[in-house]
Length: 349
Ligand SMILES: Cc1cc2nc3c(=O)[nH]c(=O)nc-3n(C[C@H](O)[C@H](O)[C@H](O)COP(=O)(O)OP(=O)(O)OC[C@H]3O[C@@H](n4cnc5c(N)ncnc54)[C@H](O)[C@@H]3O)c2cc1C
Image 1 (cartoon, rainbow, N blue to C red):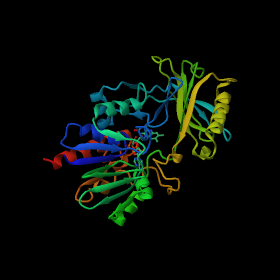
Image 2: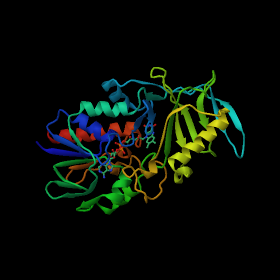
Image 3: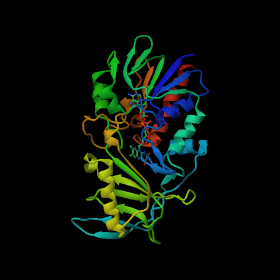
Image 4: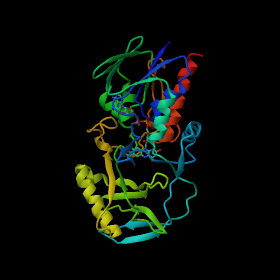
């Protein structure tokens, strides 16, 4: 059986593994982290599900929706209430705004985005090797993939590592064309510059009949915030993004400043916190290199050259940012993960 190695057990890699499960290929996955999911990360703390990576999707995300329906993963509509708080301080005021009716719904997974990852993992049949950080890839008449600890051989490779990270950290022998190296060095990894937080409380003190947690505050630590409660699981939670300028602080310092802002906004002196976590994705070595050059959001995402095959169409790049549809998003990861699997299946006729 020809051997396929998928590098990366994020959404794209697991989608390809799922799509190849009944094929004539022997498929294995190498994953640098000790966990599945990559930029999808629902962390369980004190029985609360804290959403720290990708969260929202919509009916326009057709590849993702098809997979979610096929796997029967429960999802629900994101409720934003009828009013939002806009905090323009210190230069302006705290103001309430009416939220216009949305033309289409925004969805999120009922028990966290990792439910999609776990479902894919259980439905596919490939072995996942965790803590295998790929350092170099060489090709003669087959591939040799060198990780920090081991060597793996394969006939075909699917590389789902974010493209800018590949340019910064992986060596190829023979080298990739310079024009392609330049392109991937300049391909933005969506949301790699963000700090996402999630916090669960005993009570939903922020809610009233018109307002349920939507906050925008460009000058404060919390830039955007949304309700993330779930009645069925008795979870009262908020989720959002912190100002990237606060990335130099520790998680504890960011947490203190966030609660100062919430206390001030909601006139709340004490909090009954059940769980808090944030992830500064800039510090995630398997998403972006520390010294990566700053790029414009979505720069080069979806460029058709990213979908070219290499080494006689035996190696494909497959991170979400390569996708022809909604590159950078969960939908792009599913779209491209399926596409690459189909290309390989076609090879065997
Ligand atoms: C904070 C945040 C919020 C987001 N919000 C949304 C949202 O609301 N909606 C949406 O649609 N999308 C959102 N996204 C984007 C979404 O998460 C991605 O599009 C999608 O998860 C990408 O999947 P992927 O498999 O292409 O890449 P990744 O998830 O990055 O997977 C790549 C995998 O490769 C592994 N890897 C990296 N280097 C190596 C190595 N050297 N060796 C072996 N393995 C390696 C990684 O550990 C990872 O598991 C968000 C992303 C973040 C970070």
